[in-house]
Every structure is written in structure tokens, then in C-alpha cells.
Image 1 (spheres, helix red, strand yellow):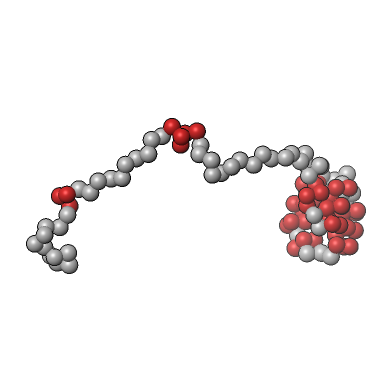
Image 2 (cartoon, rainbow, N blue to C red; image 1 turned 135 degrees about the vertical axis):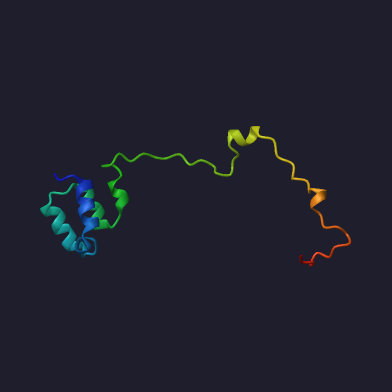
Length: 98
């Protein structure tokens, strides 16, 4: 049996194979002695059928809206106060150009 990853790489690199009709791709996979899982995935057009061959594992979903432990411990910053020395003088127009 040919390595499934190598076959997938070959298919991905070849526009002819990548866009081949299902029957033609199946003939090529038979000729290459592809795994049953790859042939089933190609025939069904469903890559998830390769999960068992590749060691499919269920991933745990984490709530992305929950605060991280680090965020819980960090106090909120107060907004920066405006520096009074940077305010325009009341006699100067804001549109005055020097």
C-alpha cells in the first residue's frame, strides 16, 4: 500500500489529478494501491473519512469569551488624564496656524 500522505501530495501538485473526474481518480488510486480510506474519501468527496487512518482525535472547544486566568488578576487601568498644559489657551483660536 502506498503512503496516503504521499498520494495526497501528488494529487495536490497535479492539476490533472486534482480536477479529474471521480472515476478517473479512482482508477489512479487503484493503480497506486491507495488505502481503502483514501479511496472511500475520494469516491465520497469527503476528506473526513481519512480521520481514522490519520489518528482522528476529538478536540475540546474552549470558550473564547471566557477571561484568561491572567486577565482576571490584572486590575483595570484608569483612563489617562488630560494634561492641562496641552490645552489651547482660551485667547487662542483652535484654528490658528503659526
